Length: 169
Image 1 (cartoon, rainbow, N blue to C red):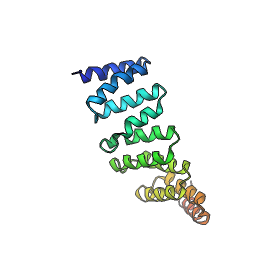
Image 2: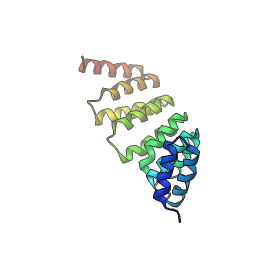
Image 3: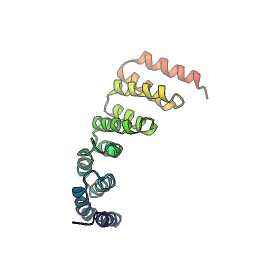
Image 4: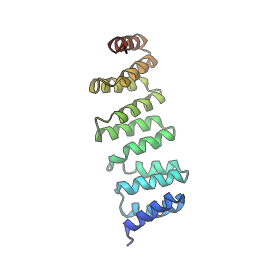
């Protein structure tokens, strides 16, 4: 058998030495031997991206997201880069199941939904996040914008006015 740690180290060296194709070849062997290895999957995805293969990175993470949900945020970012906003939002939802209070993941999911023009869903998630973290005005701002874009202009304006009044600075 191959020494997985040495192969992983060699793959990292290739990647840092700007040889992504060699990195992909070597790290693929590690992933084949240890499919649920989170760091090897993450490194293989990064090597694919460095080699200009965004779809390869997405495939590397997509195939294990159900049993290695820690990779969901990485997958979401690659999906966004690929313009797959709905899929990115779904991956952020998986990531949030692992880290339910992560503000950044919540914001990224809302932004992905807004880019996908899924304004009603974005407004719902922003409203939910606002209740969980009322001190973060980003969620109020995004909820108001999403409501406005979804067609609830009066609701959006009322929310923005109430927020502006409550936070005058």
